Amino acid sequence: MFFSNSARQSGIKSKIAPCVHALLFIGALSTPLRAADIMDIYHEALENDTQFRAARFTHQAAQEKLPQGRAGLLPTVTLAGVRRRQWIDIEKISGTTTATGTGVAARPSEVVIDNQSLTITATQPIYRKENFAIYEQSKLQVAQADSEFIIAAQELILRVAQAYLDILLAEVNVEVAEAQKKAISEQLAQAKRNFEVGTATIVDTHEAQARFDLTAALQIGALNELEVRKRALEQIIGRIPEDMVRPIEMPSDLLTLKYPSMQDWISVAEQNNLALKVQGAVYEIAKKDVERAQAGHYPTLDLVAIYSDQKGVGGTITGRPIDLTSKEIGVQLSFPLFQGFAVQSRVREAVAIREKVLQDLNNTRRNSVLQVSQQYLNVTNGIAQVTALKQALVSSQSQVDSTKLGQEVGVRTEVDVLNAQQLYYSARRDLAQARYNFLMSRLRLKAEAGELDEEDLKEVNDALFRPQAPGPLRSPLAAH
Image (cartoon, rainbow, N blue to C red; front, top):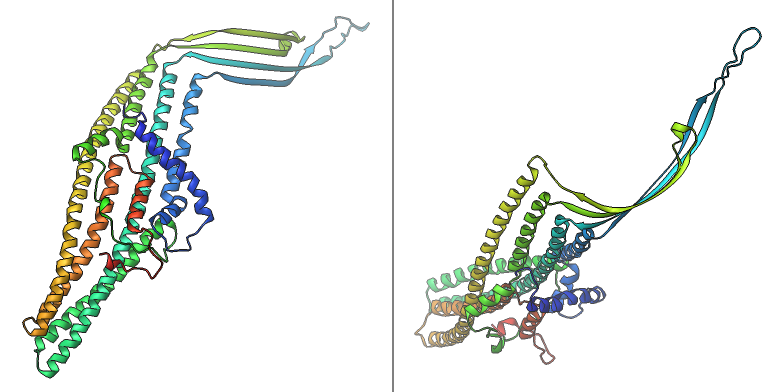
């Protein structure tokens, strides 16, 4: 069944959930003093991300559904006590008369009675169909909450990775814009000198100036985008990262997948997709709601025991209180006969909701297949795209070198050099974006298959930030 925990889901929980609580203490004690990589940011997010903290408390609250559901099967004991004081007037009439013939008036007398009672009632349900359904629902609700908490943990991994890679890409765009501006500035200065000595036309100067102005505008936009991306990460960890580790060349062994074909990934997702498990649990809960509604037609049977100790009973009538102690034990059987057709209405309502939830389950299943297919294609296409863009970058560099040489011998113009440089910088930026898009698609594919955990994020982190020999930080453009 969809709501049951599979061995794979248990493995994911064992990797994510315990690490979550263990790392909270670590995150609270340490603030990164070195350049932060993805795992450093992730550890901070475990402690500071408000969405994940809310999910953690929601999961904690959901665990109480099980003891609440079990309570309907256990005995209930109530203790009731009464203590009161009664004042009773009793009229006594005397029949004696005086010599004058006048009678003797009766004097009222007042009796005070202390009345107190203590009653203990214990009820053990023997057969209550509704309570059994509620208990089964509580187990399903806990399983649903477990899957939802793992989803929240996976979403945190994806949000941290996306925010971090967005900043790296924005930094690449800034550095590309700065390098492009510097190169075009040099070309502009050279174009002006060539025009002054008469070896170039004013058109070349205007072309270089236009490219320079456009690049300056792009640089401003890139700086603004970098600030926006940092603010997005601030929303997760509660601070703006001051220093981040620079990425290096991505190893080729990351350009592989655990399962070779799309159908393999779809089959895994059908078993482990967490959104599908959540919706499956919702459907099973809806089925139990139908049973709860139908339970209104069923009798109830309880075992009831009563102990009563009363003092001062009957004083209101007799004026002489007595003490009573009683003990009772027996079964109580109740048959519902007619409730104004309310039970039938609730059954029809529950059945309709169950069918609606079934359609939601089918839609979730189809959406899971769609998402797995899309992410699989994004990954496989990303592998091809990264490979092609790496070669394009090499070709663009060769084109720049040959165009500059052609300009020196007079067979290429200033515009040709600018165009070659533009293609080269675009190739560097496109390669960086393709790499980061590939990494995110790879993480999302595992999330759709229900297999994403902290180890996958660590794998990406190690691939981007493998330890290097001491020295100055390497520019990300060297890897892109």
